[in-house]
Length: 184
Image 1 (cartoon, rainbow, N blue to C red):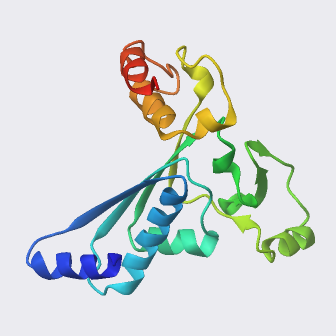
Image 2: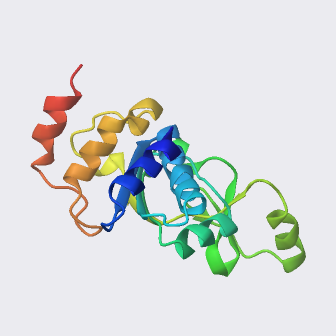
């Protein structure tokens, strides 16, 4: 269905520059990234594709990441440091440095023979795109931090709404948005 709609859009707007922004949360974030890959590999005149993902699991290896970058796909991966979903599956070999990354902790470099064995497994992932790392702990309005709340899309939207910069991670006005929209 996605391919049919992209084909329709390409035909309808054939004489105009076209770009697509795909977004998703959790599994939808992973599917958004895979859809971007599919669009750029399926269509000869593929539009520029941007992905904004919230709380998605890891998707793809180095080859997958390189292909997306080569096709010009931009990915913004919004991650809550307290959300376990963003840390699965597998583990990450960090780009060109070949440093295994488990969760948020980088481990010491491995000897090349071990590195080769690790890279041959199906559990090696490469970070795709740019990451905006936020934390539930930065919000003065989140009283309890639990696994379900950390993964909730409303929590992500609250954290993005309150984000200012890495040196000033939260702004006071975000309280009203969160309190108004998060009560059940």
